[in-house]
Image (cartoon, rainbow, N blue to C red; front, side, top):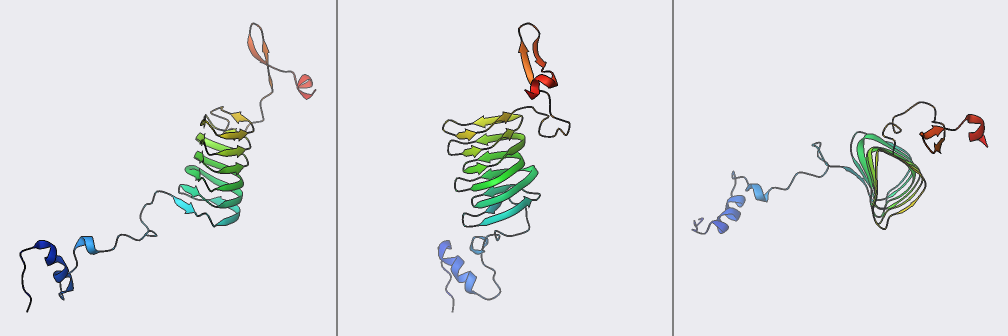
Length: 174
């Protein structure tokens, strides 16, 4: 009834149709995108809008709109080119390709790409502003600042010989 062929390419479809013979591995579907195995990052798509606090234990890519806060101190956050945030971000590594209005704290570093637009303060030990990036705010690159819980330091005044010295509190208030 079945004729064996010498051509191996024609052999696989016949075997897949025969009862009791499983299809070849290349014919089986790939692992579903939502399997419980490890994945590179969670994704908030372009049409998603979130109001509130985002926290978790995995990397995150934001292409949609977020109002509130993003707190993933042990993981990476990427604001994609279509991402639009009115939120404070706290993560290990923060990369901005879209628009952020809010303060950004990077435990390791913050990168604002050429297409990025940030209006807010950045605190991280390493900060990169790529050529063409738009930024309005302040940058604090004190490595301990992201984790410090002590009171703010007094403003500094530069003297001619001894280097920066703290400004007396009365003078700082003026």
